[in-house]
Image (cartoon, rainbow, N blue to C red; front, side, top):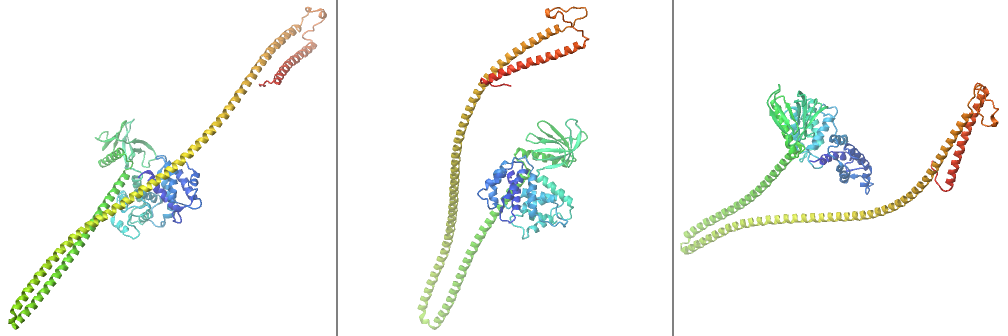
Length: 619
């Protein structure tokens, strides 16, 4: 049973729970919600438009289970990746939908199972049920599950209660449904007098063993790899790995040992104050462990060897393998039972035929006896007549002798006739055997003819399906060719537009480069003029500083010309001198600003003139 089959069983309950009118159909709005929730718990992206597109030809009416299956397989189950989601979440979603509609209990009763236990029993039922819809569980699987629960509770299973339950009219011959099974569990017949907490623990244990693939779990002492000290851990064994936790609640996982064909288990002698030791060897490490007693060590070593064997054989679950074996045994038992019934029917037919032949023989014997009695009566009558004739008519002795001879001849003829009848009976028996052989041959010929007709019809149907698939592929190929031609034409137009844009961009780039070259030349000329103006400003500043140097008392100012010979330079303490110096410095600053402004104006006029000639302005 693969993952798809397990998911389909749970989803079937969810679909039937949405069918409130029991018509086999569900509205699209409900299927949208169901599909969205399934995509959420299965960790796959949900396409809300896919359902409408899939059922666009049937927008008015609801959708049946057969109509929903192609959408479910294509858009949901085909995208499922094993290990990317939690299977229990899918089961809880489907259980929530179906329990509201079908699971009705008496809340005041003390024997009613809690919701969590009912959910686990529902999951166990789905795991052990047959792969046929509607889902039922055969009586052998029901007995197997109840025995597992009773073993977990440590009580003896009572087969009488189960036989009484199966003898009721409500139970079908092919199996029971999950709601009948839960009703039986809630009746308290199986767990009568058992505490509810004990029953819940037993159900959880069986659930983890069968559905969770837990081969064995319990406390063991483990020797550390680094510190080499002994610590008690809770171990959980599955077919693929051996995990160990801090406690029984399994909240803190301390390690995970992967099991494969290279692993082996060995029993170790007692040492380090530990007894009942054994080790698990992998390719890279050796794990030493100690059990509480010899029985536990034997159980653990056997369980680990079973897990390694399952991994080597490519099997992922022990109970799936056991379920298949039980199913094969049931099928073989049913085949043997059917063969016995056919043999009994053949024996009955032969017995009836033998009884019929014996009855015919009895009838023949009775007829022979009646004939013999008639012959004896005739003989007695003839003797009486003969005596009377002999006493009365001695004269007619010769006639009487002739009559006796004729009677003897008649007896011989009757004997011959009886012999002919016996031969005729043998011939009839042989003819009956030949007729039976001919009838068997005719039946076999008719069965062969029917098989040939079915095979011919299957070939015709297969040929028709292949022809439809070929036509669909041809139409898809033509659509793909047209689409490819359209895409090529669009790509060619797009390439031509891009080439034109590229040429225009090249032309604009060349123009920008030419404008930049001209602007660079203008900037160089402006920088050269700026350096020349800066040199002139420095020269005039030096001249002004030289002219404005104060003259001390008794000194004579060198004459620069005849016009300045009679000029008196005031002292530095003269306030008029300070005001004059301040005004002259302000005049020089304004003059320098005007010079810079005039140069900037000249440069801007040059730029404007260059722009008027068709150059590009660069900031």
